[in-house]
Image (tube, rainbow, N blue to C red; front, side):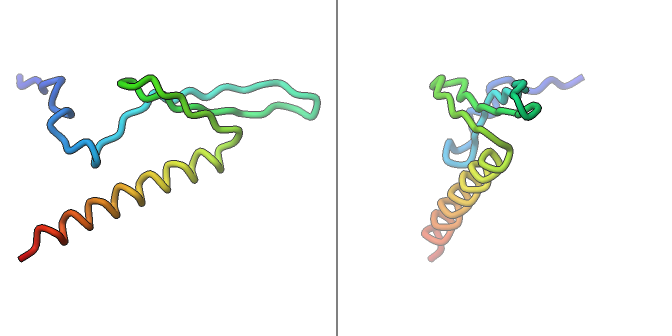
Length: 80
């Protein structure tokens, strides 16, 4: 049986790899319940909080688009 090296993800270009701890919790309010979300970078301990799923999804979308833009720019720069 082949096991995966737990450090394999460190071989990936840091601009193309993101990992987070996702926390989701519900808070009871007067008008019902509200969900909150946060992402924590496990390496830097940076914590980003979101008050709803829309801002969370918007953040992830921007992160992916930024990463894709950098990757495409790097790729085009390698062409001769």
